[in-house]
Length: 183
Length: 261
Image (cartoon, rainbow over all chains, first blue to last red; front, side, top):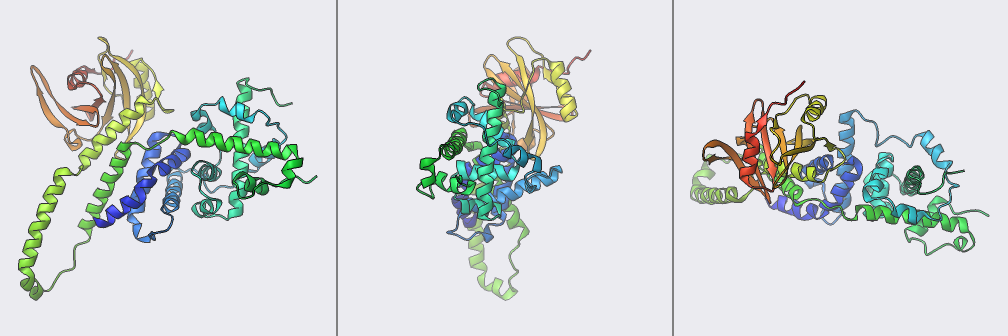
């Protein structure tokens, strides 16, 4: 009982963060809530591996990521560990000449749901890295720890993810006629 | 001129570097930096209003409690020797009485698995109200029946409409780890959700409430919502909403098999 209270005291303050991260991965509330529940149950069962005083939020996020990989494997989807497809990288590289002078104005036109939907289109590991760094404010070292990659990988991944997200939103803005087509 | 690398730009963006002399002379890199900053800011804003619900928090607590109880049952205490038991029996007896008292008291207050089920049903209703991306808006019972057949492999019962009752749509939902179907009905008192589950009404912790001149209904309440349920065929139809119990029960009375061409 005391252990469970200790666990709840350590873990539940991070529920909002875990929930938002789950939503960023799943894209809908029902699946996100299932993933969050599974994450907390797994965390509770492995609470003996948690060292008090260390970063509980990062520990929970690591478990969340692993649970998400389990979910994808269960669904037969290969996603989270797949490298950025070459065509996507090439597509990304070909877009770097776009002018961004009115970037903020364009981005403000999108609803929160549209921004999150565009984030959902990024590969899982890019999406999670960008979410943890920009939304939850983790350091690059913490993100690297959660994703189990080198800090250098996080730096390049988040920069590329931000650019890809911006491009997707701008493509949509062009489709909606909010800005001119690319020459 | 050599432009900043992504890593250098990232360092400036995250505040690790105070700035970079190159930015003072290069409009392109300043533009790249501002573009990255704008996306970072907009993304943070997009999630700013998103919080977990109290229902989710309570469900997690109930899950943890259940897991704790189950692990306790799987790990019996080591057996003590007979001589030790004889020596300590007065202490053990007192401890047993104390444990029994604590368990009885705790059981009076803790949410059971049934209470967790009611929380889940209310959560499904709240998600239906938010008209999320998976919600299939449709008012025609035949169309909704087709949706259920295609996506869930069964046709639910729909209420006889009219007198202020109108279908709004349906969606798949998750209940006790299973995918279930739910649809939404607009009523004079507000929107309610009908959720078809295979669990029995009793396993949901609902209690029979007699009604004068009408069949009794199994009912419960969680948060601001009332719940009513009835077994029809292989499914238990749970109606959830912030309305009177009479309205929910009347809606259950109106459940009919959809008429197909």
